[in-house]
Image 1 (spheres, rainbow, N blue to C red):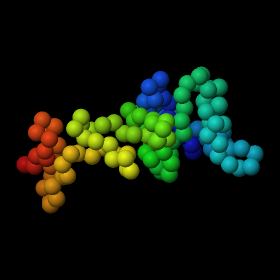
Image 2: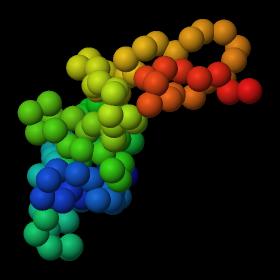
Image 3: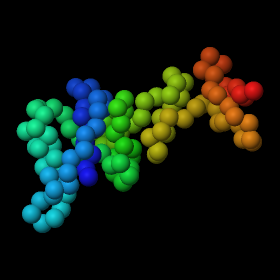
Image 4: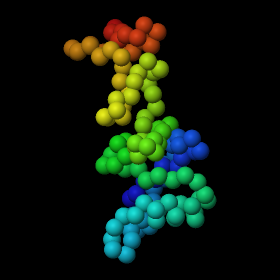
Length: 120
């Protein structure tokens, strides 16, 4: 099954939809994203559709609701966890300004202090 993210005008994922692989397979047996886009436009109407990978084999992350599709990077970026966190340019994951302490304790991020608080 092929998965497509349905985007709003700001390239934010509104939802995802499953399309049968037969819809996106050409006469030579190759997957062609444009066939899926054409199918969705004919079925759901004009919109912004981008194929996404449930297994994360392309476009970095699965395009879930709330994610943002970056055309320049051709990748889906998850929502930012906290305002102080920055996007890792390699993994395209949000990272805190301070590493989480090691050990067996559980921690939660405290945005007001920009530090990790141990959970009692």
